[in-house]
Amino acid sequence: MQSNTRWNNNLAFLLAATGSAVGLGNIWGFPYKAGENGGGLFVLLYIFFVILLGLPVFMAEVAIGKIGKKDPVSAMINTAEKTNSTKNWRVVGYLGILSNLFIGGYYAVIAGLVINYGFISASGFIGKDPTVIYDTEISSFLEMTFWFLLFLALTGFVLARGIEKGIESSMRILMPTLFFLIILMVGYGAYRGDMSAALSYLFSWKAEQFSAATMQAAIGQAFFSLSIGMGTLMAFGYYMPKEQKVPGASSIVVTADTSVALLAGLAIFPLVFAFPFLDPNAGTELVFKTMSTAFAELGAIGQFVGPLFYLLLAVAALSSMISILEPSVLWVQERMPTTRTRATFIVIAICIILCLISVSGFNVLKDFKVGSLENPFEMMKYIADDFLLLLGGTGISAFVGWRLSKIIDLEKLGFKSKLLFSAWIFILRWVSPLFLMVIWVLGNLERIFFIKFF
Ligand code: PHE
Figure 1 (tube, rainbow, N blue to C red):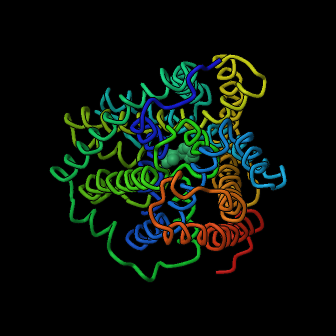
Figure 2 (figure 1 turned 90 degrees about the vertical axis):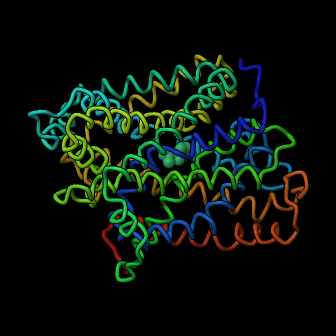
Figure 3 (figure 1 turned 180 degrees about the vertical axis):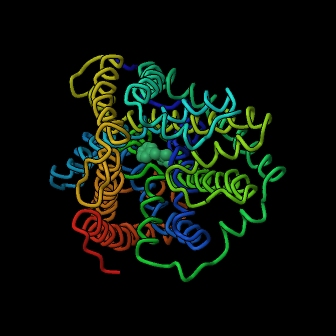
């Protein structure tokens, strides 16, 4: 059994929550989504939704963990009891556990590909075509499986060591490394690439590209990037020292996460624009095909810069993956009850099965379609990001807005102003559930039934 269920100090929460938030979503996802959705307008909408909806729901999830204690399911039951609400609110906790597994079930596959690319770029591209390399790598079921297993082994190792020795100490190394690497990559982009083209691509206002889809993409990305809706923040709130303030700590994490997303754009696009034949709209392949082509074009130095870039991605992915599986490990550990190591094994085993399904979407089952979802990998991603996370986020927001708010002690939670508290509750009651549900319904109608309104 885990003896220590608290972070050692306030910094530990900040490191762990930032480690969770800053991940593939920032460095792999944000730049390509900004690219696909018209650049500047997407970035501005993204920042707007992070502040209007992301930060309030982030704080709500941390508050549930801090007040309810224990794993996400028990935290929901405890807080429901405290507020005389039905225990059915525990569904929100179960949704979180399900999201853990489904996100883990595709996230590790991308992370595996990242590690693979680290080695590929270190060995250099002389005489090889990066586009062909990408197609060859993803076509091998066994090779992709090998890489994600390696990544999951690393994740399992950290998780099994527990909160203090595992998560806290690994974050102390991973987070400074990540910030150092991203600054280095932006610096190199400014030196060798076309920074002004990148800035105008990311920040110029392209009003003609405004659509419901842009808005959906921006909200979905904001929630995913902030790790909202799946119990991670509840677990991390549970480990929070008593005196740590929720609004202050949350604002720091949200600012760090948004800054890294923007920096990732400024690390990637200057290099993409340095070579006119590269396309900034390459979607999910941007950091693989497009960036490795840029590293190949850089010649000898590319063999050095490339692995650093993939190391940055791998570090970001590992710190997030740990946090993705933590709520499930905690739940299994308390539910059974069993040792931390055994709980980790069980969760990793389920994750492996889901990852195998995702991998098949790149090769053996790549033509297996459901609705507009192109393959099993896309399905996994859809179930997790678009279906479960937004539902979880809505539940958390409504629960804190309508139920938990009645028993919240402003000062204990860390609110200095009553006005800010009321604004927070107003957003949780009315604004975010409404936005999230409209987006959820419209998005699902479009993805599954091809029904489009805008
Ligand atoms: N926020 C992480 C990222 O941007 C992913 C994540 C989602 C982590 C949900 C934990 C919970 O990559």
